[in-house]
Length: 92
Length: 375
Image (tube, rainbow over all chains, first blue to last red; front, side):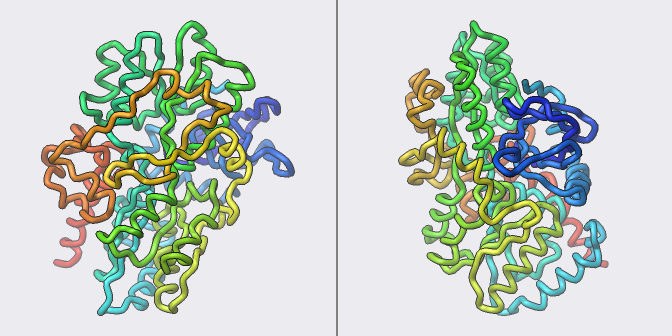
């Protein structure tokens, strides 16, 4: 729950309900972008975001995303479990 | 120095570790508290302790949301979950947290409709799909997850979803740290500030540490090298007699935090006058409840939860470990009556709990040191 996992935005789905499709280690799921996509702040397809429980909490650069992914993969079980829970997610 | 090969940049790790050593006064004992459970996990997982001089002690803080939840709140969640009209939703971390009469996993096996969700938005989707049932989300977490609950409630209200409510157990990070600083049990020198919480609240809320208590704070990232660098930044402050809040995790954490997240939280939540913390007792203004505008979504009101207080099992010393007074292996039941497979206390449940982290990785790191010193 507390792990922030990097994902890459592959599609902005719905500006009104603030949903985008993100790719997280090959798993594509909907996430909410309301906290990083408001006012002057915008995220676009191709941007990397740090995701907590289905919400993009911050925009990060690619190097940070790759380093974080490597760190999470080394974590093993805790990250596997987080990905497993993400696979079950169907945010609409 | 033997294990720096595990680091992404071993050369840099080695250099940082030697600078920490060179700044260490051999006649002084340093107590640095890592506030966040994620940091505790990294510290044990990567044997950070083994890279530090003996004089530098890392004390584990209260920043694991599952671990600080008092047993009474677990019991109340279970009581809601047992209601036949309810679909009870929660994060996977909550399932094995012991209440006084079992945990959510056991209640589920007995027939309660309990579903693990990845996101509160999944709980809201379940409410949409089951209009004839009542869907309750068990909200836990510090400021890292509180904005997600807030945005979910904003959405529920906008859509007019009436069969959705939240059992709110969100807590805030600053009051327990202040309580620890006020406690005579523990004399700390400096703080490693939480990373992800700070993406939301920023760095300014930690300014009371240097200003009111004279303790430096460095907000840190989660990789082993982040932690080492943060420890170095703290040691430099202590060495130079500086005392301020610094941000090691600037690549993710903005000084002012995420203003949109704070705005949404302010709309949906208000501070509780007080809240009970496992091990720390009642702390004023340390937790969030739903604001009056969102009272219709408040499971505590919908199900009139009685607010019971339940003492921890006598043998369990989670409280002392949470306060940093005891190290996990010093607890009487550590690794015997209390293991990750059969946890007695919450610190053994979550992978970010100090006891589970120590059980899984800490002992390994101790063995390494012995092997290292013999060689």
